[in-house]
Amino acid sequence: MKHSLQRPLLAALLAGLALASPLTPAATEQDKASSAILLQGFHWNSWNYNYGWYANLAGKAADMQDLGVTHVWFPPPSDAGSNEGYLPRQLNVLNSKYGSEAALSNAISALNSRGIKSVVDVVINHRVGTANWADFTNPSWGCGAVVSNDEWAGHCGAADTGDGYSAARDLDHTNATVQTDLKSWIGTRLKNVGFSGIRYDFSKGYGPSYAKLYHDAMAPNFCVGEVWTNLDFNNVDAHRQQLMSYIDGTGGTCAAFDFTTKGLLNQALSAGEYWRLKDASGKPAGAIGWWPQKSVTFVDNHDTGPSETSSNGQNLWPAPADKVMQGYAYILTHPGIPTLYYPHVYDWNLRGAIKTLISIRTTAGITSTSPVTINAAQAGLYAATISGSANQVAMKIGSTDWNPGSGWTLAASGNNYAVWTKGSSQTCSVNVSFNIANANTAMGQSLYVVGNQGALGSWAPASGFKLAIQGTGANASWSGTAALPCAAAVQYKYVKYDGSSAVWESNQATSSGNREFTTSSTSGAAMTRGDGSFKF
Image 1 (cartoon, helix red, strand yellow):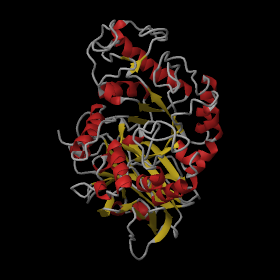
Image 2 (spheres, one colour; image 1 turned 180 degrees about the vertical axis):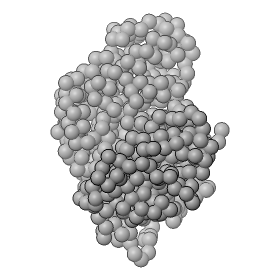
Image 3 (cartoon, rainbow, N blue to C red; image 1 turned 120 degrees about the vertical axis):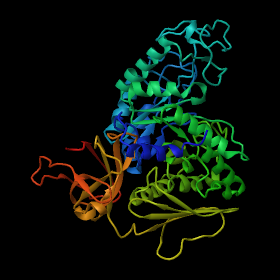
Image 4 (cartoon, rainbow, N blue to C red; image 1 turned 90 degrees about the vertical axis):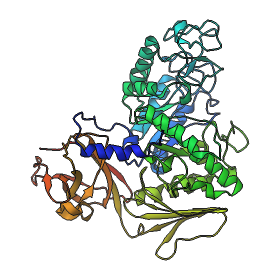
């Protein structure tokens, strides 16, 4: 199977054919040029906080907003047979070692009041019984919930649809009762407590179509799966393909953590093999080189890395502790959705350096789909130029000296990393995401935002801001992020344009007849225009 880099191209082609079956507007950050910054809001030892971890997160809501975080990934919230929550027991009981259900709700509300969404860690590959191997309660399931090749002798379900997990009972996702109860738990119980995003644990343990089934029950803003498999440095594309296959299996509704990039960064940082970060086609060698829109990058997490210090925690596949800022210089300047790790921010005293990199990313308008030009990838050096919607960023990691040349301003630097910007210090700009559906485009037409700003074409469709289609069909949604001046009174309309003739949407109920809003006065701020449908 060819990798899924071809799928967005195919979608654009099909859209031009104006297929008859329209798609609904994109629901997740993975379906647009995303500016999201995910924070993993826990580590392996967070449960050992006297049931106060949720209160700790609530107390940091303002600080997370200041840092630039848009989404926080919570640990598994249900009652469990393990301290960390990864052996779920009574799914519908939302009291755990991290705190009570009330404390959980308070933490989610505190984050929400700061514009930060909450992502729940969904552990549904396996489950433990209340008192023994498989006496499942709340919800109650019989032996048919356990796959036929599980270690428990009492199993009576169908064959497993993925890899096995010996520490608990593998669940049969073909079972109608299991499906119904999991949809209710995810789509009602967890959603009602305030979660609006999903992180799937052990995603290789069951067919990805079931991830879509449960995704659809919640209709989340954010969805990502953990597909962690062995990385053969002599066959990196096979590893990337596993991630693509998972994404495809979910119908594109969920992203995948970019474990390929994680492994390549580990090797580059530990052995100086920075050449591994560039593939044969000249693109980033991880999943972000094939489908960055559906890739979530990270330096370490609760499994791969340490916790409060470099000497405790899981440490199953850690980045070199003294080089993690090189990792952040990479993921925070590159496409994909970057993930911050709680200990790095709050325990390792790296918050200031990480915030500087986030500010550079935000001000430049770098998103999950921003283009990358790799300038150097060799022993001891990786360097690249990334084009944001507002300006460009250049970066290098490794011990070898490099700079992008004249016209650049050094914006951040540290031990063997540096980041430069071009033009960002002279311009106050705001990143505005435009989203609209049901434009009924015909073959050859694209959708543009045309308005009174230079970036919107100054009312000339040929110079307007071209949006990207999200899906297929005449009525697919369109989106894109443009850099507009701060504190600007913006007027605009959506226009269907084929390169020669323009079809403008009709007037709005405003004095000008145009869509109107005023941009933020804060440079680098992010705004979203959810404009519903094209007005005929």
